[in-house]
Length: 460
Image (tube, rainbow, N blue to C red):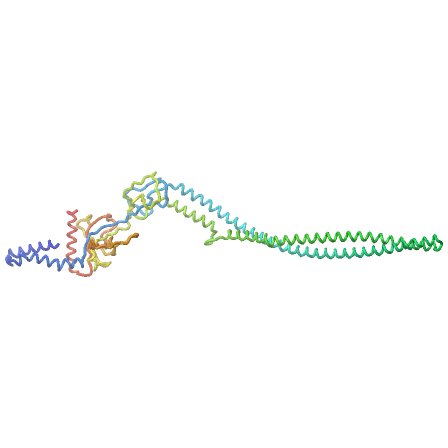
């Protein structure tokens, strides 16, 4: 542009010399150089701050299509570079193994739901067993009391029998003495009768007395045997009641110390198994339901769909190819046409006055002769040399290359004039930003930009 304006100046100077307005002396001969210096200082340097420009690039997002599941591709219904809508099928992975897994987990879910009902029934049965055991303990306690009372009664019966035996023994002894005395008296009376000193009536009386006492003694002996048998029976009954009391007491201790804790532990385990809940649902059901959701997700992901509006570039995927969920390997390149970015590279020293919302203009080699109005959307305050990547080494700071890399300024085209989504990714051109400073230089920048737009017809 400086050369162009200088040529205009030289033409005007030559015209002025020809018509005699000025004389071509040394000053006028050197004036083109002074004119170029003046333009550079007064116009072009301020223009770099007030209306900076740079190379514009059109960027589009390319999504690397990597399926979330692995399997054999059975269908690829898309065509390369054909417009697609969000959700259109890109390719289909064989869904049969994923469907089988879903069906299996559906059956397992139903079985788990029924199993939960069985767990609850088992918990109720275990709780009923605890209650029955507690009732058995109460019954056994009453039996222990009854057995203790029976032991007391048997002990009393034994004591009574032993007392009766003692009395019977004493009676037999006493009667034995009386029988012996009666026998001696009978023998004496019979001797006296033989000696003529006694009478028959005395012998008869002695005989009656002896016979009566002998009969009483035999009866007392029978009673003594009965008393002995009663004592033996009472002792046996006492031993039996004591054994029964011991057995009942042992059974009570077994119920209290072993059986009740066992059934209580079973009931606690059954209750925990039946009442293991999360978010109002049994944990086993929730677990299978989560597995089913994951399996259903895998089944859904066997159909790979377009993530947005766009198109597939360089389609090489074919049915029969086995694809895998490998982050380092993509199977299809999808061009997202919903988002197109236009970035212009501005030198760092020229960014001082650039702000979002300022007016801008862009030209594209795809559109020679046209200038498109735009607006500054945002500024990318990051250059490749300013990026720090994770590393086990200390980052070296080198001053060998002092060149300041340009920074990117993202522009948004005026949608009423041009839909930037129609621009090809990789399209290049020039852009200028009109800041709020040095507005006098904006005119020159606009002229320069339009010259660049017309040069796009002849400069590739």
